[in-house]
Image (cartoon, rainbow, N blue to C red; front, top):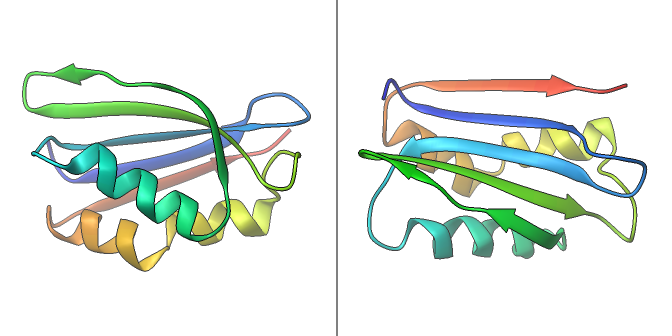
Length: 99
């Protein structure tokens, strides 16, 4: 793993898909959920996976019943907690896709 990757894309008109890949460690999932909910983003469902030492988590999220706006998606990618999560592993890669 060469660092944390945070990817946000549309997942229909009412939700977005937040995909996070990072080195796995105890408490990681709880930390990610706390960061997301601290900014009032709702996690509607999640797909949690670990391959070796790498956590590959996908969260279907919404904000006030709608997909994340481009500015909110960008802000989530730079939330202090996620940036710290990323910086702990020396590299950040963030991609945004909007249709």
